[in-house]
Amino acid sequence: MERRRILSGVVVGTFVVILVRLFYIQVVDGTYKEDAANNVLRYEVQYPPRGEVYDRNGEFLVQSREAYDLMVVPRDVKPFDTVLLGNIIGATVPQIRKELRKASNFSRRRPSVLFKQLPKEVKLRLEERTFPGFYTVYRTVRSYPRKIAGNLLGYVGEVTDRILERDTAGYYRSGDYIGMSGIELAYEEVLRGQKGVKVNMVDVFGISKGSYRDGMYDTLATPGTAITCSIDARLQALGEELMEGKVGSIVAIEPSTGEILIMASSPTYDPDELIGRDRGNNYMKLLNNKRHPLFNRAVMAKYPPGSTFKLVNGLIGMQEGVLRPEQLYPCHMGYTVGRGVKCHAHGSPLNMVEAVQTSCNAYFCFVFRNIVDNRKYGSVKKGFDVWAEYVRSFGYGRSLHSDFAGELNGYVPTSEFYNKRYRGSWNSLTTISLSIGQGELGCTPLQMANLAATVANRGYYYTPHVVKRIHDRDSIDRRFYERHTTMVDPKYFDPVVEGMWRAVNRDGGSGRIAQVEGLDICGKTGTAQNPHGADHSTFLCFAPRENPKIAVSVYVENGRFGATIAAPIASLIVEQYLTDTITRPALVDYVKNMQIYYPAYGK
Image (cartoon, rainbow, N blue to C red; front, side, top):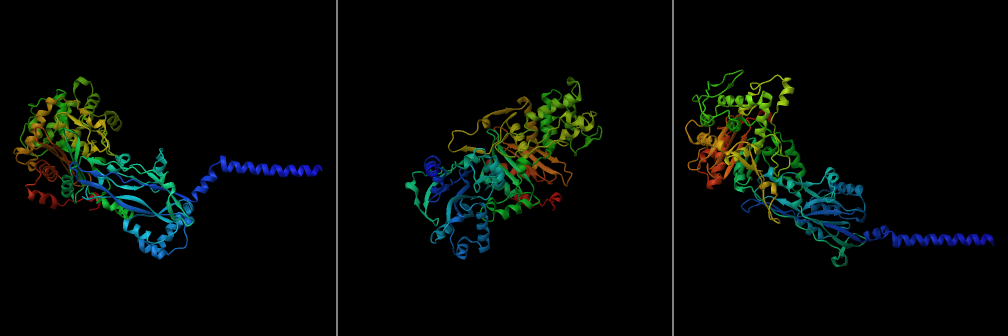
């Protein structure tokens, strides 16, 4: 009797445990319910089209066109005609099998991307057949009507594991696309839009049976926001045409706003090369190109500014009271103190205006030493640090905080640098090369164009930026409206501007080749020494002289003198922008036909 009672208790207890467990599974714990739902429901991500990008005149630079990813849920795949599928999507049987194995290894129950960016015609052909376990997802791919500005616009690529690790907000999933460079990267959150989701019912074969509960739980994707770029598409196209076959960059800025009118890095690439099925192969070709077309030299290359930097030294000298515009200095084919600095033939002695006009090296050696050796600072070290502070106020040696990811700071040396290098034993002659923009100085072409804009404005600049308008906002980032003032009083810019005007518009000027009648171009040539081959050619200018509309910097590696190639290019850019035409076809041919040897790049 006792044994029967115990046995009955065990049986009853077992049933109680089972009932409690069933109650927990069916009512309390939603996991099993969710798993059951997942057997009949498929959650499809709805990807939004990325925002378009226009140039400043409303012309399309980037558009989005319809495409589809072929997805697979390995568990739902039934025997199918592999050859037929391959013929439809343009893949071989081994490729399909390889991708199916990868998808199965990832997860048999979760969807994986099998083939990406298929055109709409392929999607329609797939719908004419039945392939259990396969379905398509709407995506968009970029298209480029103008085929220009590859480095400026950037490209879109699939998110990497590293990107997913950094995505603290959890927006991205494996297989998503993201801006990788240029505007696509800098304005990713604006352009990408917001994903939605569509809940579909599927049968045991993984074939869709329609929307779950008439779309009650669906959410719509929000398209990305369009952007109007500050770039002038025709000017950009001309710049890239003139720079073809050369290494360097062109940057043009509207001085009154800081808007970038052209940013051409050469060599460049056709942005269409980095979309579609051949993207991977094309990317590797570009990556292995010795001239580095994926490298945006306009904001990422560090060059010596050369003689264009003489403008800064002259302005600092006048502000510091160690230089009067009428003051004369001699030039005996160069500066003859210490090791000396060579110069070309021109009149002597010269005043400030004439020194800028002829680009005299000796004159600015005198000026630089007067600044650094100024007795009121008590030592060369302190005088040098004052000089460096002035230079940084012009935007050198630090980021300009443009809307470009990867913008370099450049470099302005400090007294600490020279103390370490020379163990405290150095003077103004040790650093004399800085007087003509050589030595340890390094800057980006963007910083040089910003100097041109600063001089055009007589002492201030706006942060250079490439986006003019974001279409769902009243204004862009407020930092782009803030005026940055140099440490030099506006009154000291007049003799510098006069010298720049004469450099282009008077006989004996170093930039006479850049003259265009009636445009009043003010310019400064530069020849930057290069230890790896011929000197670099550089030129900065603005026009017209009063109420300037454009400031330009051109830097051509191994291009020799500033007037040889950089000045003609800048002049053509200014003429096109201000007059909407080119009146010197012979100069265009001269620029296009110039062959430059690049030993540092293998040819």
